Length: 364
Image 1 (cartoon, rainbow, N blue to C red):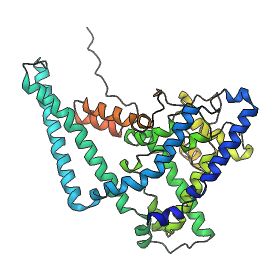
Image 2 (image 1 turned 90 degrees about the horizontal axis):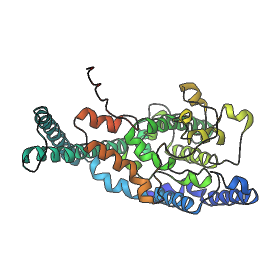
Image 3 (image 1 turned 180 degrees about the horizontal axis):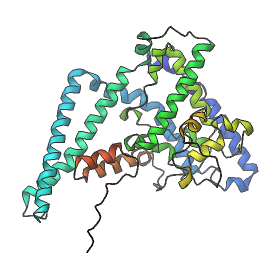
Image 4 (image 1 turned 180 degrees about the vertical axis):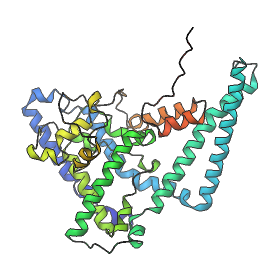
């Protein structure tokens, strides 16, 4: 099954083209040293990290789904979710106990054993409940929305392997991609997956290969549902490949504008905005091939001021491990430090950077 899928995946056919395009871009910068000193130029450590993340993003989908597959089985899922419920209850009980003791003026100390135990319980139980529920939900959704199964249960006639089937696949995939990409910027647990791609302060074709490696841990958009509309699984895979190949070449500063194409397509200019950490550019231009979705749903921003690439708070590391896990570690640290389930859920399903509101001090 995996071998058959890989043989039909256009993104893998295109690998020689990726490296050829990067060679051409680097040659252009060699002839334009002033431009090479900017964020579009290649820096060895950054490029090496991007290529490593690209390699891991190819391997991870072959390994992680198999490891998580048991969670899709009903009996296993019930046990794991049962454990999640118990952990959630333990965290809630510990929250109440700690809150009562704090209200009474107690402080955790070596002599206050029960208060320290309650704080330890909620630091462990909260993240455990979140992780168990998230992994089970992600695995269940993935197992129930496979393209082959959706196509077998289609509600519309088979659209075939011609122009119609391919056209619906392309437009359908791009539409779903817009919403998937947008949600990855708006929900922190999905941002923890996607942040990998935004972690470089450089912007060149190698940046396009800095792809997430932990998509199996997030509830990704069920693209296989296009099969319900009569789109064949092979057409869905082809549409995915064409969409991603388009997105590869727009990661460049060399191409400044596509003229009239800027009004319809996701271009290098539009995507530079998307990678900007400038306040006006945050969470803009999510489209894959078409920019019309951003125009329709209010997330379009034209390239205006000079783009500052990277994150609002950069991680300053070229380690693939740090790049892949830093936001997960930060998110679970916030969950562990939370004092209520409202706070925990806010740190997981709220926007990146969410913080609980601190009650205003009463006027003296």
